[in-house]
Length: 308
Ligand SMILES: NC(=O)c1ccc[n+]([C@@H]2O[C@H](COP(=O)([O-])OP(=O)(O)OC[C@H]3O[C@@H](n4cnc5c(N)ncnc54)[C@H](O)[C@@H]3O)[C@@H](O)[C@H]2O)c1
Image (cartoon, rainbow, N blue to C red; front, side, top):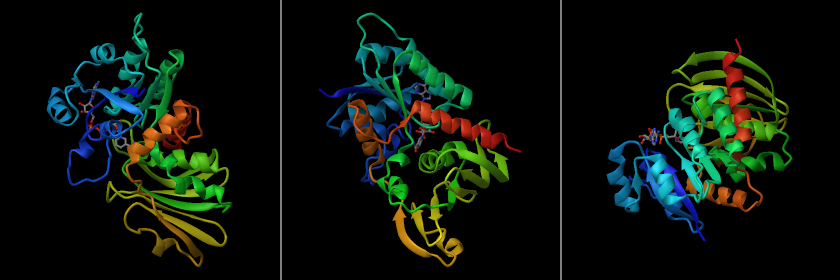
């Protein structure tokens, strides 16, 4: 039987990215669920009633503007939270508090990153889920890119690196922080060389982060919101990842040999996410980020922010 899935938040990542017909990939949660053999879309929720028409044009008569009603009506065992970050805590609270007799409880939540507006909200989200025995997963989907995970498995002992990321550290840089915490261990020290608050929760950061196994320069790219790329190196060679164009090689190649050059682009990312979630649900090996690991990431993001 397919897993009943409710998507809360029908913006860009909820449905919007796939409303553009030129796009041949599946980039949004709703389109991944509808195309899945394992999951069944039972509803889409958004507080904005204008989302009804685009949603129902693609997915049928399943729109709700009231979360509680949607939960009662559809009894999902899995909820994807892809609403605005400032609504994440309130939505998790509503799901956790719904405890009627005869109502199938939500067992799994996939929440978009960042989990909340700050560490304290993220902590509450994890705690609500734990108390209500809901397994919480966070969509740091770069963790499932096989190329990345292979970095350390190939015994390359990378010790240095440079990451260029765009936007804020919490919104975008956190993808890489999460990945490198897995690959290179805990953060031992941070040296800030540039810092600027962007809004009431996010910040731009450039500086050195010393992980247990590697020293990495995080460089904020202020000129674009689209690009990211990174280089990792050891004594003899280096590996370069880029999402579109090569932006690093000329400056960082030094005299070492480029051994691998890969694109970071993941085709149909949300399909891979669902595959990972399914593996998690049936207790198979997977790289999905759990709520408790994402909380550690958030703690480090706050530490970096507060280092003078
Ligand atoms: N994993 C990734 O790489 C990735 C990529 C893009 C966005 N995101 C995250 O996904 C989330 C949404 O981003 P987006 O770009 O789609 O934003 P968006 O602004 O396009 O869409 C957000 C939607 O949530 C709805 N919403 C807000 N409060 C709500 C509530 N209480 N109940 C129901 N619906 C509510 C809004 O009406 C809107 O339709 C953010 O947390 C963002 O950080 C993650």
